[in-house]
Structure formats: C-alpha cells, structure tokens
Length: 570
Image (cartoon, rainbow, N blue to C red; front, side, top):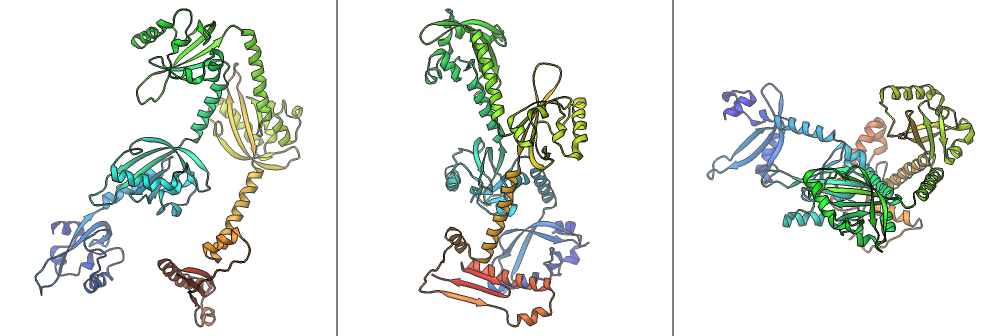
C-alpha cells in the first residue's frame, strides 16, 4: 500500500513482483524463503496469526523496528496460497521505551515489573544494587524470590485471588512490607503496586515501586524509644480529644493503665474544674485558630486516677502527619512540678546513664570541636586505637588518619565551616584508620554535627572496626567459590547431600539408562586447534547437550575434557 512505499523508500513498481525478503532486516533476509517453505511443509505457526517485534529494511539499507502481524488469506482450492502482513513502525515507541527504561533505571528506588504469572520481566539498577541479586537471577524468576516476612510461599495465591476477584488489597495502595535480599536478610520497604495498561488479549502486567524504609523504621523505633524513656508524660490526641498514644511516664504519673487511657477523652486527666470545658477549648481552637495554649508553656492542674491533683507544666503542639482521614493530631508533654529538684537530680542521673551508654558502646566515639581537637572519647576508642584517654584529649582528630590524609582532613573541616557543605557529614563511609602502633585497619565512619548551646560547633564521630567483617566477607566469598566448584562437578542434589553428609552416597535403581560419550579422535583433533578453538568447540557441543538434558529432565553426572556423562532413571 501507499504507506509501504512512503516508509520503505521503494516505488510500487520496484516492490510488486519482488521477493518480500528485500524488506526483511535483522540478518534474516536470506533465510526468509526457508521460513515460508517450512510453514507450507509443516503448518507450524511460529509467526502466522501472531504479533512479533522484528526489524525491517528500507531501500537505503537502514533498518527500523516494526511490529508484524501476519495472516493467511483465504483462497479457492487450487489457487496459490496468499499471505498478508501488517507492519507498524515502532521507531518512536522503541525510542520512548528506551527513554522510559532509562528513567526507571536512574530511579533511586527499586522498580519491578511482573506478569500475571508473577514472573519478573523487568528490574532496574536500584533493585539489583539494593537487593543484591544479579539481573540474570531476577529476570524470569518468580517475584516471590524477593518477598519477605514469611509471605513468599503464599504470594502466587495473592495474585491469583486478585486476578479472580479484582479485590484490591495492595493494588493502588501503599503498604509497608518486608523484602528479602540475596543474602537472605530482610529489609523494611514501602510498596506501591499498580497494573499497567496492555493491549486486549495480552498478558496482564504489574509494576511495583519499592522504597527502602529501614532507616525510617529505625528512626521510628528511636523516636518511640525516646518518648518511652522521657521523664515527662506524653499524650497524643486527635481533634476530638481522644487519646491516641501515651508513653510509660503518663501511665506511671497518672495511675491509669495504657489500655484505660488509649481511646478515652483526654479530659479525664484535666484538673482544676476544667474537665467539662476541655472539649469546648479544643473546638474553639479548631474553629478560630486562636492559640491560647498551643505552642506555649502553661502551668495547669492535672488529675490522677485516684482523684488527687498536682501541678504540671504543659507544652502543647500540633503534629503534622500524613493522615489519610484528614484528622489533625496534637501532642502534649506534661512535666510534674511537685518535685522540680528531684527532677533536676533525675536529669543528672539520666545524663550519667547516657554517658554510660556511650561508654558501653562497641563503636569508638569521638567528640571534636570546630578546630578538630578531641574533647571526649569513650572506652571503645581507647581500646581500639591503643591510646590512653589523656593521650587523645586535646589532640587533633587527624592523629588517627593515615599520613597521606592528615592535611586533607583539616582542609575538609575548614571548608565545611566556611561553606556548610560536606561530603561526609550525616553519611557512613568506609575508610582506613591508624592505631597508636601505626597499624592500619578498615573502619566504618559516621560523622554528625551535635546541636548544643554556644556559637562553636561540635561534631560526633562513631567508628566501627570492620576488620572482622572484612575477614568474614572473604570467607564467604571463598565458601561461595568452593560451592560453585562442587556444583560444577556434581549434580545439584548430590552436591547438596554431600554438604549435609560427607560420607559415601550410594542409591539403588532397578532401571537406569547411562550415556557416556566422548569425541572420537579428540587428541589428534585438538592438537591442530588453538586452545580458544578447542574450548569453543567443547562449549558449543556441550551446551547443546545441556539443552537436551534440561528438556528431558536428565541428570548430568560430569563433564571432563571431551567426556560427557548423563543418567536417567524412572
């Protein structure tokens, strides 16, 4: 048709009467007649009646990606058989696909695409980097490979249920789940799942976006831990005054259990005759925005479970949340003022406990000022580096840096103080440190700026000795190599049995077939070939054997030199 002439560059006269192989690209031009002959001979439909992505060739020799739909045209008996092909230029689509793939691959978050059989069809670079699998391990595997939290075995059932019922339990929503890395460890993720639009009749496709929230969960635990360890009572309420959360201090100070407090109106702890008016105070704030208590500190009476009242200092603030119901939340911290002095003593004890925690830390800790001078170290730092505490204090922190990095360290600190930019602050990096005896060892360094009163800046550095981890990693690598060698020499089931039981293994089968093959005249033949040619020949031959072994579910016993041994039993 006219579109063929326009898109391929040949005139209608040049096309009519010529072999269609002139349009065939991708190196298949010479084989095209054989494809047709095979179809006419066998009736096997490899392309007929299907859509295939192929390459077509223009008159100028350039090639374009196309979608081909080929069908046979009905003719009368005895007439030549006719076929018609519809070609769709996919150049723009392929370009857009490459752009989309590039954008997805550049994403910081893992992205997976799966079909309705839960088979992974696409995984971006972040998925490979963060989960530790290779692309070959992921593509073609069931997505349950990366499913954690004990749900891997049930994941296919979840998809089948959705395909059958359309019930959206995860589709189109954000869910917090666990994902499994290649090393078997799990990480907390936020999953966003959506179904992709496909052509009618095509297999359904789904895409999942995974965000690593491990650090967020750690921060949540830290926040909860901080709130729970707070000496002041804490209450979180919604806009109706209903208590949503309390800490241990609230339970201890007021005498109610956590179960009695959660779900009750916060007016139950309001003293001074204001209990019945509290809901009105809250409603007025929501209505007018007038801040009489919000954002301020007020001394007020509070009521315990036993009816007794005591004075508190109340700090109340509105908490910003991503509440799907649109409800507003408020957080109040209540300080018991009846024993201020006792509280001050308790704070001092708390600071002492904090120092004790720092001292008990397995990681070395250094506190340094803006000049790089060490102000404080813990016992782990003394133990790891070999200096005494007195030898550390007042010295420049670069004393633990390798010689070639000492001057650069002071430069980095000075640059941060001038510009406020740092490539290390708030991050973790693997570096090398030097002990007192001048030996070097690998470390994981985390540096943060410490907020405290005063104009001068102070920094805290936490250093973890990676020597043992590095050695363990080397052991794991060597163990993996040994296991790969074992699997290369023996069938997988035999190798696994040998790992569990190093004794002799012998199985009896009444009926068994054994194929032992080697190449006739291999020695003479290989003497006339280069090593590369010999290896290529063996690889090509045994690769074809491997295909047959996989196809017929046989057991490859060994491949040594030009020998190939296979068994089969019922």
